[in-house]
Image (tube, rainbow, N blue to C red; front, side, top):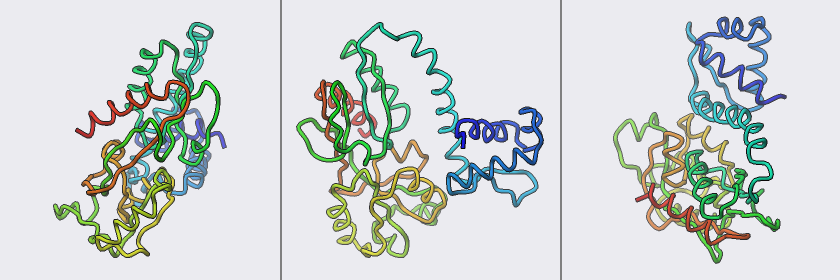
Length: 276
């Protein structure tokens, strides 16, 4: 499936407010457009539009996808300009970053690091498992776990504003999720036992803790209002989730590669400013 093309179809419907007007804009019939959206939903594993109403509305997952889809299409459109403008002008530093970091953080960090190193920085966001064990030369990697140069953030409980606890105006305690699901990201696999123990000590049954969940999957589950996510405030706010600190819990990354100290310093400054 051509993901970028399908995202264009999705955004056309969002912008036009209906399948029929989007089909006219795209110069195609409505049935093929509907089929392509169903294919996209099948690929992502969730419904993007609520079709039970007279006027279509986005589901929680659809609302989450809109800014991400726009960002992906903009990045794809900018690539030719970036390559033709900068090719051969400055040395390149390639950086692998967590997929939990929002686009504003990646953009600010890229600009900051480019100035510090006087070279063009090319960022790439990857799931935790794809960043672990990277040993490429001339490459910077922000990987989960402890190391010589670290970036850390406080962890907390993130839940959807539509969650029953949020609607009741209650500051949640881990034990409030005893009958639900508490999700631990793959980003924290290296410390999942200690995080799970912390949650269990605060009243969460071990059976309610689900570890090793990929970030995109976790965000969708929380958007469906049936789960709570253990993550940092930067990630929670980027996904429009309510966040409450979980005392004693930290997310830690270590930076490896050439110029690791500069990247760790720049990243901690950016993340720390938002957590302050």
